[in-house]
Amino acid sequence: MATLEVRRIPFEFGDDVPFVWNPRNVAFSTFMNVVSVYAVAFEQMIVAAVREAIPLIADDDVAQEAKDFLRQEAQHSACHRRHLKSLVCHYPGLQQTFDDVIASFEEITDTKPLNYRLAYIADLEATFTPFFKLLLDNEDVLFRTGDDRVSSLLLWHFVEEVEHRSSALVIYDAVVHDDWYRVRVLPSIARHLLAAARIVADGMNEHVPFAERGMNAHDIKPALSMRTALLSRIPGLKPATVPVQPALGEVPWRQKITSGVRVLLSQTPFHNPEKEPLPAFAEIWFERYRRGDDVAHWYGGLAARSGTT
Picture (cartoon, one colour):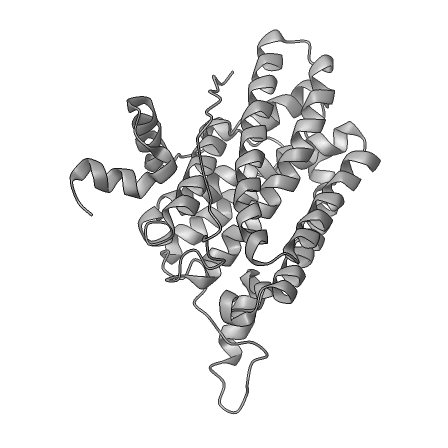
């Protein structure tokens, strides 16, 4: 069983946090803004499902891990809400978009059985360690050049996802007892995730002026991003949207392929998250937290410690 620590980080976001919080990478900024929306909606669903599951768990150690897991997830949701609140200050119409995405996940909570919801959580959480390892292994190009408040929020969230990488599957196994069920419902889960992504992208396109978002929010989807980039290279053809650097354009292809393969393998019925390779950055983050560093301002705190500006 994993030993999880509930960390309450004092993240604060004023009304000056820009939509494109990393101007060096417009697409990654938009992608991570979408992650903030998903974090609130998905983790709200996690808390409801795990609370329902805990009385059904016979093993005391698993039940304790479930309690700590939902406490971590509740913290993630609360802190991402602060980020979203700062965006709504600039773009009030986004509130309806956020509410619509939350409602789509609440519908899953209200209409789907517990087994389905635990499978949803286990399937999605299984993808996080290989994908977030990719991001954390490249934190210097993806996060370092962005707004320190947003970067620090995301770094904290992703290292804690790595920390509790096995929890969702442990809870699922303790309640569902069917290794193949989560594979069978995966297509349904994928459809819901794509539908929620359309809600977010439509809302961002509608409520954030193009001059301030710099791209069609739908183009964060890999297939559409690739299509736009290809069309922009064909003489005489004008793509429907202005091409931008892909969100992970600076990440080496070998790493992206490795991550993609591991994400696919994470959906197999006998996947074991404990055997996943971990990002070295995670232990660096945990050590700085244990030391008492200001992890709410990750790069600013690092600069202060080194005497740089």
